[in-house]
Length: 256
Image 1 (cartoon, rainbow, N blue to C red):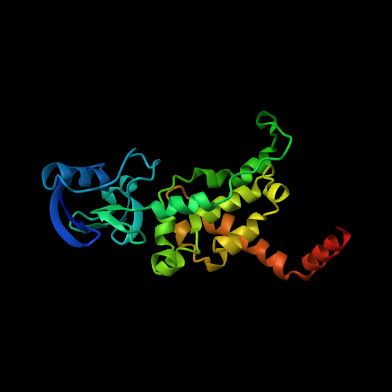
Image 2: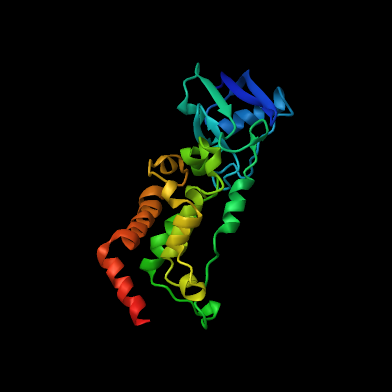
């Protein structure tokens, strides 16, 4: 059974814009993206919106719905009362291109800065072997669909534009944690670089104050803070401030 839904959608571009009110038909079982598509088809054919799979797996339709970063295709209309105004705005942490479409190229730039997986020397790709327990440690992080909702909600990026050059954000710190947990990653042996120190010194791990807002908005329910960021911050603290670790490193350096 259908009803008339009340939507408030941001329209504009990089030079500015405003919220516009619409009344549009909504039907049982629909999601916010369905309503946006109907709005395009019936009232504003030039409304810009990014989407692809409509199944919560491509990460394309990220937006802010009633102020919360969400996927439009995974936000059911049944979550809202029929007389409630549903406000849809673009992600706030990234520059607006037009309407609900933002420029997320910042994220791809950060991705390119992270050292790639570095396999052990002398081992062919088909000869890699891992225990299932090692696979399981980082399997969770590979569920990431790169919707960048975690990047958008992280206040280090969202509220402080000046931090962006020095801070990779939760998605890419999680990527470093995933590689650091990989038992076959030999970046340190191959290049001398330590992934934990790279995260701290080059990608701003120290900026993160573990508010867990990134975990709260993740559509894949990845425990970004608890399972990636906090353990990596703990390893940084151990290496820098644990007196036993410091003494062990000192002895090791003397022997070499």
